[in-house]
Image 1 (tube, helix red, strand yellow):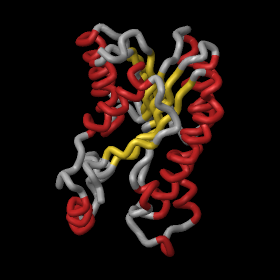
Image 2: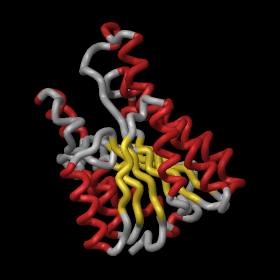
Image 3: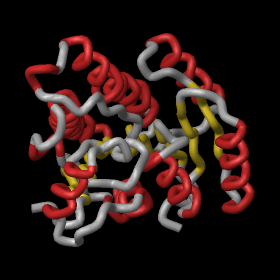
Length: 247
């Protein structure tokens, strides 16, 4: 129960890595504001089930992270609960079409950056203002090995490199407020985001991984739970590769 009594916000909580984090965090005792794009009966039922199973509260919050108005409305909902915010996981992200750098338009680049970078920064601004009131908090930004190695499509790789750089800058500014900021850089994870990869890309990627398999979302979520917990109280400004030994 690493996170007992802590309140977390997870973006992109309905699917993939974000949903695994929702399951792992509630299992570890955290209460969660679970942000996602659209209302879903299945997601609502899951939130209710996790709440009952683990004796925590799970509050679904819906917003389009591209919209400044909806982001503000989501935080108004969070603030109306009058509960402290201890943990932020900026997980929501999108990936563009698999194409060459020379064929990627400015509009496509902006679309990826709107969600992966600009929305992440705005959500972090709102969240850390709340954390600063108690001089405590942990921010976990989900980047990618693509942001370190540049081995994916240009829009995605560049956006995740921006997430990494932003995380290090956040850590510098937030440390005096008692807030830690770290990034996770997953490798190849078995999610819907990677389901569209061609077999050639999949085979090439698996050949680079020492463990010769993709990660399961829960394996990324477990590392996030550690970074969110007090066990990592002296860890900040770090980029954690969780890639099965990608060489």
